[in-house]
Image (cartoon, rainbow, N blue to C red; front, side):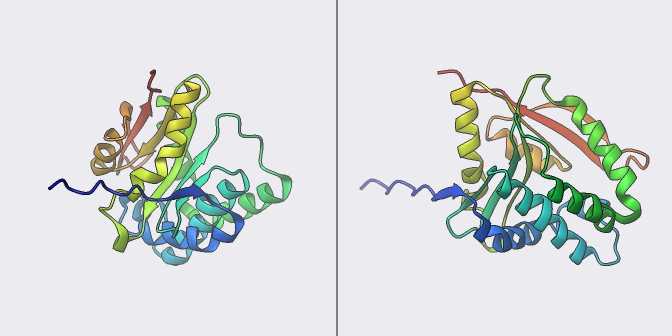
Length: 206
């Protein structure tokens, strides 16, 4: 008797109505990620993470139509497109206001570390994976990989790379299963506390 084929999760582009749950999903996914305790000051960390998830993980990519979710929004991926225009003035004003509120005194080292990680990005236009996460209760079901697929399939069709930076070897191994490869490794600026890996996925040519 043959085993039934696994049902592929339904994945769709996120809408404005998804922003609250999308933000809550990423906020629930990130507390145990090493970057979170390194980047966000301890005082008010939960609130800082929630605002980071709401603004950069949800609202900004949803407005740009570059966020994908499972149908129940238990997993989400937020991307930056290769041809992304500058943020609208009102959105940029919110970012400028909230960046210091989220990162506090950590802002300079966080931004400097992001610049270090960017050294491994492709020279040509590429999709940038800004955030991906799955609610803890929904993990180990392939949902994280599923929400990456719409962009990865587009990358293959348009022959465009995808790239990201991560801060744990576990994340490196997970992304390698989706075709990413490490192109650059370093450590966070100033304190050298965390490793940084930049990974790039070259498009698959049929």
